[in-house]
Amino acid sequence: MNIETKHVDSVTIMKLCETNRLYALNAGIAKDKMNEVLTQPQTRLVVDFEDINFIDSSGFGALISALKTSKEHQSKIKLCNINKDVMELIELMQLDSIFEILQDPTACVNSFSAE
Image (tube, rainbow, N blue to C red; front, side):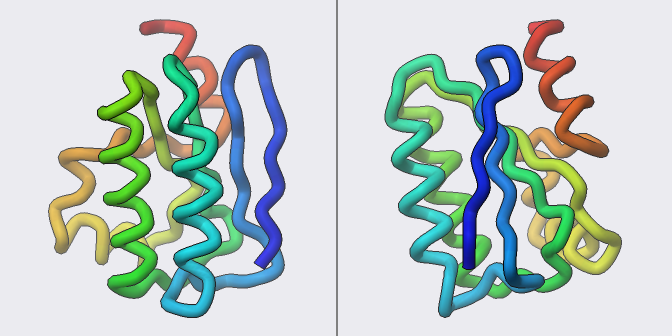
């Protein structure tokens, strides 16, 4: 898995590339990268799931770890571009109530500006 990062204004956008799965084989890499970014106080991170169409428990664990890190360091994390199948899992696990999920990276960046 490759993780692309770019900065728009003061927001870091992280996109998971070269795979369509966030699962046991790559969740640790994603978790480490998200936590590395979120340990910087006041960081604003957007995770773009555009190419992801499957997440397993390890992938969800990586997201929960990132959320915990963000709270510990007064950072923020938002998710975007989540496809229908993955969103159904997120809703089933009620993670949509703890993560802010928006349509695309631009909407996330704009929502940070509105805070």
